[in-house]
Image (cartoon, rainbow, N blue to C red; front, side):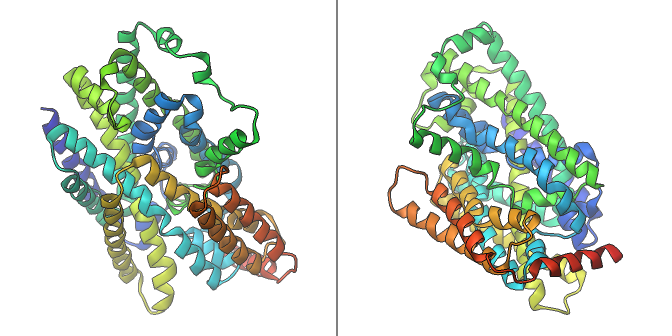
Length: 470
């Protein structure tokens, strides 16, 4: 019965994607849903950006093992990211009326920076997508004994289909349906677990007070790791195309800002439910402690929950992972089509570009499948995907928006030094997280390279004035 529901749910998702594809007539429809999303749909899409395997399976296992300090990256960092987008980034980026972040880098600096930023951004998605495919494959393995490799290929095919035909319209509509499933499924399961455990106070008292510490020990090393956990997603995911597409797909500038605030609140509150479920599950069923902590919640639901709860939970889990994966597939495909291929073919019509972007989605899916087959650790895959954009793109984006003296050379140095220093300290063992070194190097590169003005800001202002007249 449960397995039947899972496959029916996957078929329904495909059906929604096919229905949504009828709205896709232009690249603007495919990439940003024609900028027509109302508040709840836009907020649901933003909420679904990262609420996938990392939160439900990865972060919950980290929480059980390491306490509250183990989940600063997610959900706290993710909620911070959405809040900062609403405060500082949604409004100015929405006004530009562009399709990608990299279009901004071209407007603010030049074509060279656009290309470099695209090349840096694209690989950062493969690990994220791979993590979601692994999680979906794990679910199918638990439910039906399907081998991990077959599960990865099957799940990639499902997500690829409705993303390929429906783009952001399909993603936004499925995200809304899936968000409702997530809220209902996780809420009811959490209520059931808390009730079986004897109440929330019993679950909390089963752990020492230090387990719920919000701040680390007063040592430089611990605080640097703490800071790194906050900024990995909190800052590193701000300059990401999937987030950008969801923001600018809103009906208006006000909705773009409000959807970021609402999704931040949703993420922080709903993100605690998997943590509570995992903690209560460990208390009730200690025998479920296995070599793979990512499997604790799925195994607990399979072995001890009623059929209705099983259906609701796996519906929520599938919803979370599918919505995250589809948006992450579309984002790099958009950048490849818009920023790398389109400038090479000046006579490319909009319908032809739409076809190109769809086939780019296929290419992204293939690369992600290869990475998923090579590494099956969800938490590690997600960490790889977030650090790259932090050390290379966050500082150029922020400086480009808010610092008039930011220059082309400063941006180039920021991207290059950030990446090289981060990669160096990924190889060389150090007690300080490598992304801290990369982040500092990115800031230093921007400052040093921007000491001499180059007129890029004045050219950017003229480009904005031209857009306003249009």
